[in-house]
Image (cartoon, rainbow, N blue to C red; front, side, top):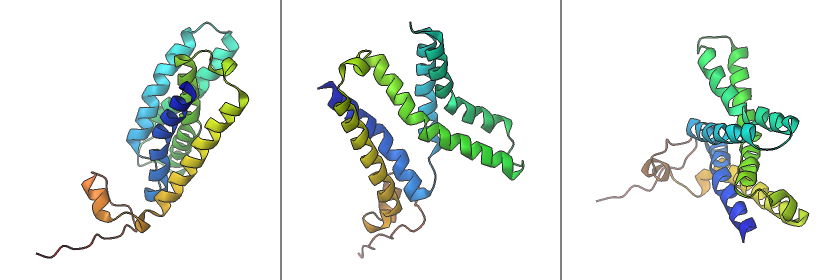
Length: 173
């Protein structure tokens, strides 16, 4: 069932940025750069697809959000005023919060062009609801990671230890 594949695929992509935001208080650069790569490819496709120009340009502008974040990081020096840093953070937040769902919708329409017309409204609501619940739950799990993960869990997986992680049980020899 293609709807299930789409739902699982979106959740598989969206849970990790939500978890990292909860656990570390930020979304990692590799998530944003992965979003940038996907949105750039979708941007090129949107520009060449056979749709009215207005529709294409509106979609293309939103797909450029991760690129705006990337360009701001190149243009604004680390030693600049707090306003510039705030703009970069705002662009990163917009790139992720708006960019991830929008890019995924565009990618679904590229892979399954008839999705919008052939999928009942109820199925779309189910997909959105499941994705929303999983993303919110992932954020909450990230906030509460110390209740079910240890610092060692993060270290073994190759991640840095978030603030407040629970030290693992020491093994005596």
